[in-house]
Amino acid sequence: MRPTGPLHVGHLVGALENWVSLQGSYECYFAIVDWHALTTEYSDPSAIRGYVREVALDWLSAGIDAERSTVFVQSAVPEHAELHLLLSMIVPLPWLERVPTYKEQREQLQDKDLNTYGFLGYPLLQAADILAYRAEAVPVGEDQVPHVELCREVARRFNHHYGAVFPEPQALLTPTPRVPGLDGRKMSKSYGNAIFLSESHAAIEDKLLHRMVTDPARKRRHDPGNPDLCPVFDHHEVFSPPSTVEWAAGGCRTAGIGCRDCKQALLERYRERLDPIRERRGLLVSKPGAVDEILRRGAERARASAAETLREVRSAIGIA
Ligand code: AMP
Image (cartoon, rainbow, N blue to C red):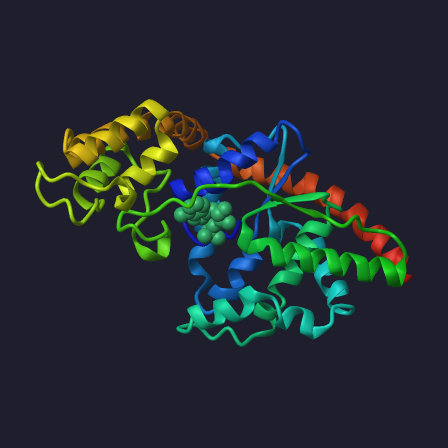
């Protein structure tokens, strides 16, 4: 994950909760990829360092277990950079130019000059992140599948030239809901519509009750509404048990409940889901140096594994 901001509840249900459960069946590596953040934030990198810490805190408080999994920061493992360089020798330019996110992001982020070598090479650096651990599977969303596919092609090409060093990693696709933000668009820090994991219950209450939109056609309490057009209902579907989802849908359609009742019920689900996360965060923050120590140990473990891969890579190519 790129350290470009604090994590929100979309990240929790769209990625983190899945990662937490994967820890039971896989040996997991979780990297905060600060060099990747630099590809778009190079002109003002001042916030990256702070976000690295925020993301680490968000992960650990959401249940990523640094005893079971390797949690680290990309820039603390220079082997990623060496592998990226070596892979850059064999990757044909058109492979990078045809990655769909390359064109899309350049069009979307027009305020930034992304006409750089680093930005074009973003998916190759990602391939190095994966191959440095000879990973078998990468848990990603649909939008990242072309990146994993590129990684497989690069692994295949390397193995073809120099002998079998890398397994071809599989994309581990888990269907996840797309969580809308307060304004109904996809929840995203850049839209200013997010509910962050690090927020207090009072702050979330204020956002839900005063800022979250509902079915725009339901203007008065006695107007029946359409839950299919309401982001509060989408959140019930993600956070509430089926009985509450049914209650909210039925109550909305018949005007049996008001939007405020519906939001209050959702707030309780938020409290249940986020209280344990807040508690773990409080514990971590109360121990000075705890997060730094976890990241230091993670980098040490990651380096040991990546260094082993790089020894094999250098030997396969036949350079020191
Ligand atoms: P991003 O920080 O936007 O690159 O998101 C990282 C990952 O978090 C994505 O690949 C998704 O799996 C997940 N994610 C981010 N935003 C949302 C959202 N609004 N709803 C569901 N999942 C999300």
